[in-house]
Length: 158
Image (cartoon, rainbow, N blue to C red; front, side, top):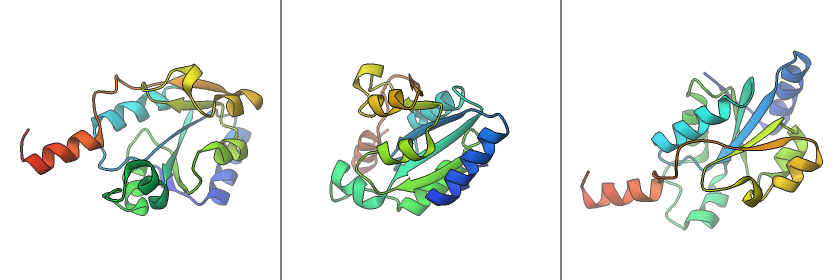
């Protein structure tokens, strides 16, 4: 089970893991109403390095990205749920509009994005390239979404 850490504590944790010779991958997302697509994405990210760090969007950022009715779960709850997955080593919440500042701080060996991207369309690709990291596309096809799950719940169907 992973741990939820502040940004400063996470930076120290990553430094210690690196000092121990471990590679680090970073994945990020909203992770509102955890579903199988999230699990497959994070399991794929975990296969890219020795340790997996997950950055969870803060509530205010989720409202900007997803609308005023989201997130369903608060950032602390979403972070705790993600940390409970066996493939995840550490989780932090980020408030910036993009994960770029966290990438610049941690400089993970691999930045992992889902299959709704290609390596060339990942917004942070130049940041990762600039410090010598690589970008990996992981997970299953984007056949699952929280938006669809919420629609199913509202409509009372399976």
